[in-house]
Image (cartoon, rainbow, N blue to C red):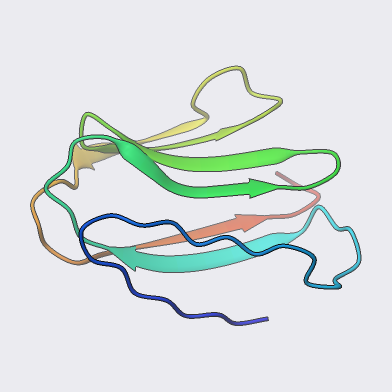
Length: 94
């Protein structure tokens, strides 16, 4: 399933009831550019899990409902107004 959207000056995209079977597998890739230091980049919820990619003080952080905190934090910041790309893959191995 591939979807594309573009936002300027804030915005949010939601998908509801896509008719897909429940699964814990996810592959999402997206680009973003911002001068804002913090915000939600991706919030994916399933029946059993929640996966969130956020920008915290310019750093990209990945967390799940199971983790209790970030399981990944980028080594550098990304609030420079340039276009950056993020890919997230979640499967049985993590």
